[in-house]
Amino acid sequence: MPTPMLTPDPYAYIKVAADGAYQNAMKNSDKQNTRIEHDKALARVMTALLKDDTELFKQFSDNELFRKRHLTSA
Image (cartoon, rainbow, N blue to C red; front, side, top):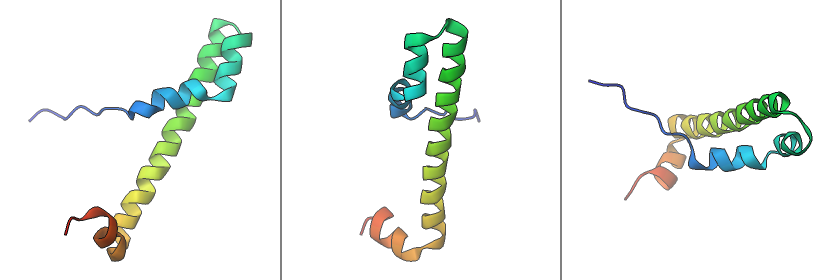
């Protein structure tokens, strides 16, 4: 069975583009520094997504009330 393809958060691209340091680099830096800032912005966005998803999983795993109230259909 093939491994399912992961799809990125569609808002990750928007969040990277909105990153202040990346925007500043696009306006004021050369291509190499802009790429470095892009990669840093992407890492910040992905870390935030991981943190959010990890907290959601923790709540789902550890908190029965959370599961009942938010994630199951009655």
